[in-house]
Image (tube, rainbow, N blue to C red):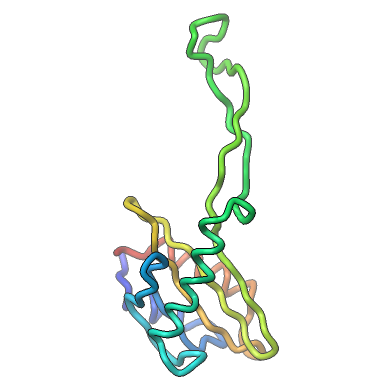
Length: 147
C-alpha cells in the first residue's frame, strides 16, 4: 500500500495537475507536497485549505444523513432481521470542490482507522484538467493511502 510520496506522485499524473498535498486538517500542517502551490507557499496553502476542510467537516449542514435501521433489542416480536425503527446517521463529507476562473481545487478526506484528520488537496488547471476524472481518481488514491 502506497505512502504519502507515492500517492502524491500518482495525483500529479492526472491531466492538468499543478500541485498536490496531504494535509492534517486539524493543525493545518502539510504532511507532504508536490508540484506548484497556488500562492507560491505550500505551507500557507495547506493552512488555508485546512480552514476550508474544517468548516466542511465540522458543520452538520454539510454532512449527509441516512436512515439506519434500529434492531429490536427488547426481545419483543422481533427476531433476526426485524427492526423497530430508523435513526438518522450523519455521513462524513467525502470531498470539497472549489472552482475559479482558471483552476479547480479538490479536497478529498482520507478515512483512517484512527482520527481521520487528513485530506488530500489537488490543484488542477481548468483548461487541461478533467474535474470528474480527477475527483474519481483522487478518491481512489485516498483510499489506498497508508499513513
